[in-house]
Image (cartoon, rainbow, N blue to C red; front, side, top):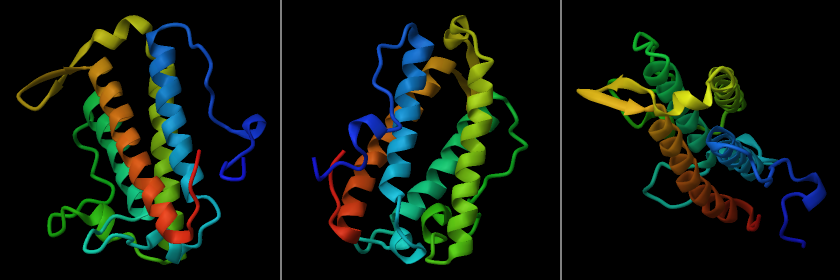
Length: 179
């Protein structure tokens, strides 16, 4: 098992048999969050910011910044209804700033991971207070509404897609694959 990121007994992800829809959605979301973190482990600022498929601006650091923004948007702006919350890394002059601003500077790395962890913690507090019955609740979104369930499934899909990107980006950085 030399391609494993962690020995099975030390893998921080869980693969239980969660009881209930909310627990199932939480387990999948948590595991994808942890997977992204694993793919970034043991890399320096330059490696995290490396754009492995030119001309794409995507990098592991860009993914962390992007997913911090995704968490912030869906949990703070949409689910909590706080549209006054400013975007984290977006700029009017550069809508791709999540990625273009991901440069190999240790301070940028520290800021990105701190923002990502802060947004996950805020999202988890919101989820902890959520009742199973609230999954079908509709919240305003655009010109209509969206269910809490749909937002959570969307977040899982977003992380799953980007975990695949992270696999390829990490392999380009140092050849590491697996798990």
